[in-house]
Length: 267
Image 1: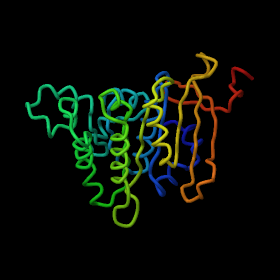
Image 2 (image 1 turned 180 degrees about the vertical axis):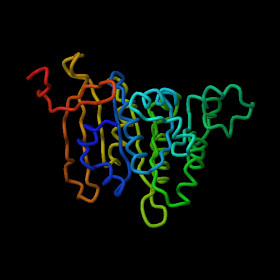
Image 3 (image 1 turned 45 degrees about the vertical axis):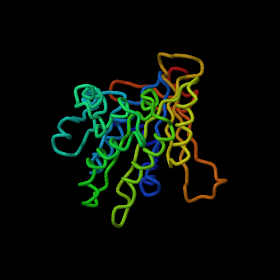
């Protein structure tokens, strides 16, 4: 997986799981987080923790293809029960083929306005991870990409409630936290709802990984900038997060990180 990213996190993923268990990954439309998501999946599997991936923006096959490039066979992991997938794109495509009563469909809110529009989807996710919770097994839950709900007509308040309910799934089981929740959002310059959603979730996160393009425009040697903000939830409210700034370059099987201004092509 992305060893440079794991090193930059400096164990913050582990400490986050012991605290709030919420990691936020935000990105712009020109900075794809797909490789980072697969890297999180690989790191979790390597530590013996299964993963539940909820796909809303990209397809399950998209992540399988990236996993193959990184040496991770996600389809095999799925067959072995180490990865469970709630394929939002597939569920959406089957919505029109469903019966006229959409009240129980995870995306039925698109056809009929209803209270708690994401309740059915939450119940489907809860069912997917239930066996892990009952066995007291730590796991990772990834929501990709909750900003997609905005384009489906879901109010950001309902999305925030949905995220909090999913967070409760990774909360305490019997004696310890069940695992970690990773939430992906998109930040767009002129989309206030998307930006406010990211800000709201960031207030509850212990770790925020923000991917952005270069302010100077596109570059062949530097693909963007990465900001990692680690919050200590045990600290009083006036405490500031520990913030690290990097430039990054995506390669076929790696993500190179380096301090701003220290790219080998600049020095």
